[in-house]
Image (cartoon, rainbow, N blue to C red; front, side):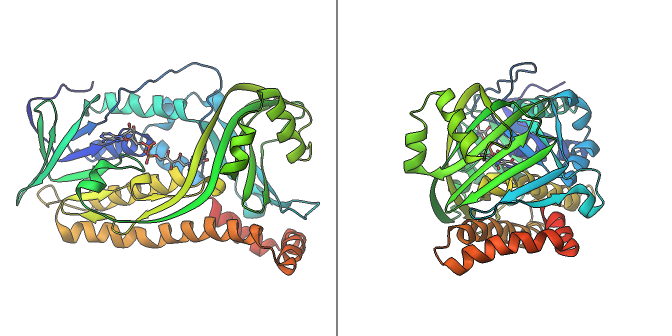
Length: 394
Ligand SMILES: Cc1cc2nc3c(=O)[nH]c(=O)nc-3n(C[C@H](O)[C@H](O)[C@H](O)COP(=O)(O)OP(=O)(O)OC[C@H]3O[C@@H](n4cnc5c(N)ncnc54)[C@H](O)[C@@H]3O)c2cc1C
């Protein structure tokens, strides 16, 4: 059961932000027998059974194995989880898609699609079971460092001391601002439109993606014949698309996806998200570690944002598990190890998403032809396909 908070509370770790990454961090650290306080500005709205959630995530097999080890996976409603057996990727000029299948890499599946609410519910079950102290509706007021501790003060007068604050409070992180950590930013001038559809034809557990200049359309498999759409387009085009009725949007998506799934029927709401790439120049400050979108926001075309955030937590978990009970997990040498070990993964993901966006946007005819020719050639190259898949399923 979650514990009540005292007016002055001591803990080993404070996690600020109860999004997917913060929740996973609280679970992982509590499982390391650390006292954890989890603080969020909002009250979570967890609904177990509802219609298809518009927010869905592609999770890699690596993420799924880790969630299994954390005891989170078994709390999920697995009837609402869909496997990905293959990815089909089209360039603007390519008639045939590049096909990356699980058999190309001898894997049972390339990943899964899960609904946000389903995963949130499972994480909250573990938060509860592990006795994490939870403060919601919290207004963070100040952070103060002393030699041995870091203090988080809330507007209501509550003061929490810990060895380490894990900042998981999202793209506009308050903790990152308090720590005065700068950002490298890139505005894609794109907006992602998100909606679900019921398709006429079976998706056959294929995640499909169409790349065009500064535009990506993804149709991801949900159970039965449902699909989740993420359509990233220029913000100008998005504003136009968002004026359409859901039936009109479904027709546009059908045409854009070359009708491979037949007629699409809209299900539920249409959401939109402005897309930026944002990377913190440091992943650590005094007794503070950044994880998830606080540290890096990436374009959703590679379906990697939350996976990357989970890998931050996996790394922190592995470093914490290698310490002895009296070791200070907030001291600089420890935190530097965390920062060093995460830099390459984050840089690779930024390069991949920016590189793909630029490749398919190129005006140079040669690049367009290469993209088309490259797709056909790649389809014949078993080793390269295996490497591409290994990159996508880490
Ligand atoms: C359209 C779209 C599709 C995507 N698809 C995928 C995908 O398929 N696969 C994938 O891996 N990733 C995907 N992503 C990326 C993914 O959504 C994010 O990387 C992920 O949600 C980040 O989680 P987080 O926990 O770091 O942050 P958030 O989910 O933003 O959580 C932050 C939390 O902090 C809290 N908070 C904020 N401010 C404060 C404060 N001052 N005090 C206390 N609490 C605070 C908030 O209430 C919230 O609970 C997609 C993103 C988009 C936009």
